[in-house]
Length: 155
Image 1 (cartoon, rainbow, N blue to C red):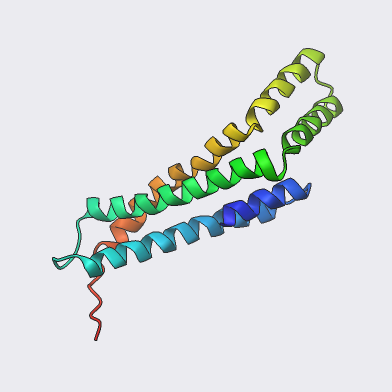
Image 2: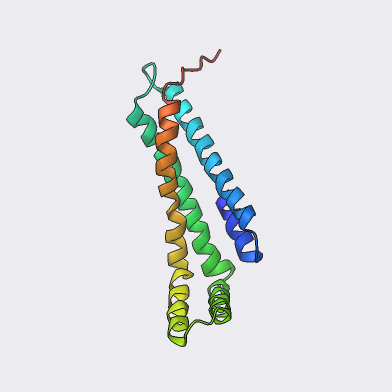
């Protein structure tokens, strides 16, 4: 969800690089927290006294997969239906940026083509799904830490 908020902020405001960076870190922490909670829940529901590292990793990757699909889905819906002019605005910003820095016309045309491709709804979906890469690294760390969690006895 924090990644979605970051995206909305980046679309809405010109200079939010510090805020975007902080939201990235908060998103990673949230992903790690939910992964840890899912692994602890798996430990508590397992028939044995714990789960293996590979089982903990898979549980954490399931969490990352769900998060990636949610983020990718939101970005697709946002750019396709909620704000269909977003891609056009980003192309205009690309043109302004390149003209200020005195790029040649050929480079500007190439930049326009790249911006149109990158800001299409499908490309936004794929960039949102790339959250799974973050999830891979988070899953490795969290699985190693959380798999040894003792079962919580409930009264």
